[in-house]
Image 1: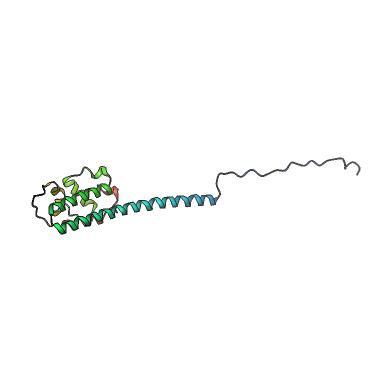
Image 2 (image 1 turned 45 degrees about the horizontal axis):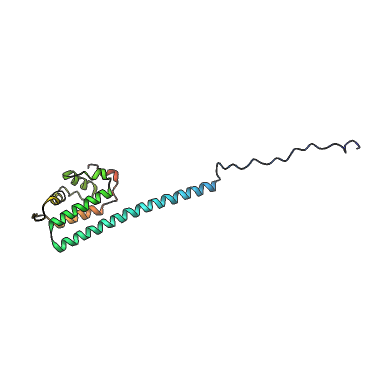
Length: 171
């Protein structure tokens, strides 16, 4: 065995595994990213819901003020003018301004019919919303104020839960 002591073994260098790639992420990272997206979407939808509810509460409060003032003063002209202004402001808030702001006369009343539960705005007491706001304060008009109040109340209760895309659709 004299000849084997001087020979060296030919060994290969140590092979390390390839470095871990950052892409694709491990399933846990996908789960965290999905959870974060769901949380962000939930917060956004909740804030949108809160905004709509706050707007609806504000409009309802103004409606109650108008109703109470009418019960005290019994002034039909001021009632119709106030209800007309409130419905117009509510429509501009609940629906796209481009669809609502330019409506007048029968088109305005038809829009109110299309976006509410009751379809009475084209009736005699409903038409007061389109005509009476332009009368002078000393004009005397005869109509059923309670029917008009109930009609406006019903319309306001139906808002803003309506689909905005169907707001201008004719029925």
